[in-house]
Length: 276
Image 1 (cartoon, one colour):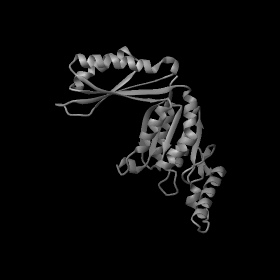
Image 2: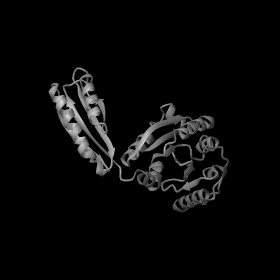
Image 3: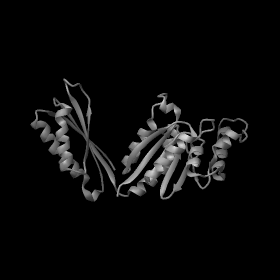
Image 4: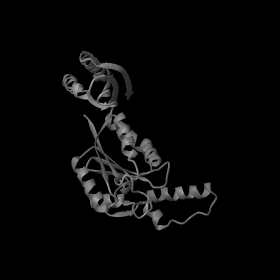
């Protein structure tokens, strides 16, 4: 049974193009490698109403996991937890475990930098103010804790937007959850690179191979020009070792390569990338 996940990225900077959304790309790759299928990525502004509406929509689709990034810091525009609280109709309150984590981080910073220990100002306490009934997750690379919220069988994980912090929390605390949920399912992929055959000619070949091999997904990526075509055909599948996914991929590759050569195209290279 396929395990589904959705990603919600919060931040005006993403919507205006100030910051490239590398978090979504990284999370999608990690989840896929763990055997979890990412169904949708939502990007939403730093607005409580917009965030609440976005999280309600995602929750209605009932993916097993929702992972959000951004909006956990101490500044005025860090409103993700407020938006989630509104979506879930929960109140915000200081979480004592989260507060302990934040205090410990500032104590560590002051000791490392040999400066007087700062007080727990409202912006610092804000990072420990979570929706009631949620769990704080240790941030190994920063101050603001991550948050886990369980809602009707859905696991909602809220992560910071700073990439190194998001990645550190994901690897330490989220990846094990996804791996356990996916079981022994692995993700397998490879690419065929072709010359001298247009994408419009390849289209029916891709349809045929996917029809003959329904467990295989094929996506074409043009790399050259229309008058000098160079294509990457990316083949992927998710499956258990007992289902022989690599054999299925090899079978599809042989069929597709034969069709390409039969139409006068050239298979330049087959590049294997296997993630388990």
